[in-house]
Image (cartoon, rainbow, N blue to C red; front, side, top):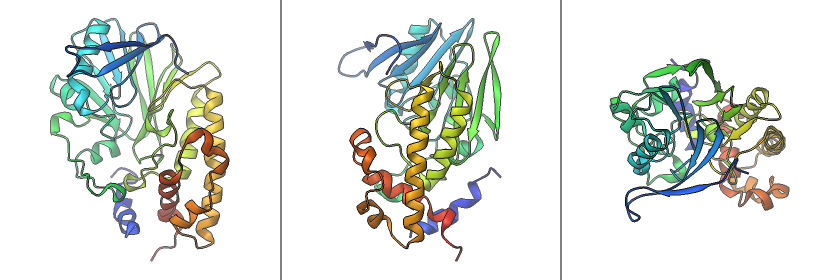
Length: 308
């Protein structure tokens, strides 16, 4: 059993700056098609935005890869866009950085076409079950069809051959979910972080599917260890970041985590934690912290609350 999967019953009980110029593309007709923007990350490697979450696509020789696949509603347009832009008729490998549906929306389209879908085993497991999270009880994410589920899973990390080099990927233990992975393109020095890093305000601490605030701190530490000062870091949304940006985020989340742990030990609840403003010096840059603080505080329950 994948690490973290057996924790779900307890967790549920506890609830009681972009590189290059952006070029807009509207495929097919203006009413039905999303507007994508594409930015060059390296030779034949591109960042595509406007699909629901950031997507990275690249081609070397006759092999094409994608990291994340946007939202389901954009999948057909996105896949056709990648085919057209990379001058290929097949996407060989799709990486799912985690289970969230704005990142796995192309799984069905590419799975049916025979793509290899790489993900952490916990991500695959989440994509096989109904998910209804307490903070959005009117939304249930349904299991993906078998053909859309990851078909090449891992537990720690691995490599994928790509045009004479090897892409590297690794697990970030219980970060913003319990299945987060990064993908690193060493020749282009591009690091794709998935949902652990948001480029547009506060990230989602999805404790319902195994994430927690200290795991996000540790995940950022792992990413910092992979990157160097020249690495182009692709986040879940927004523009490209640098290693220095990750260090700032790591220190910020570490500070917030320490404050929240103290509040938990002092007997406070989520609403009281929000009222105590543990993020106050960061809010002008990051935005309204209420949801982030609430979920980050609740994420501590499964780790610091005594077992019943």
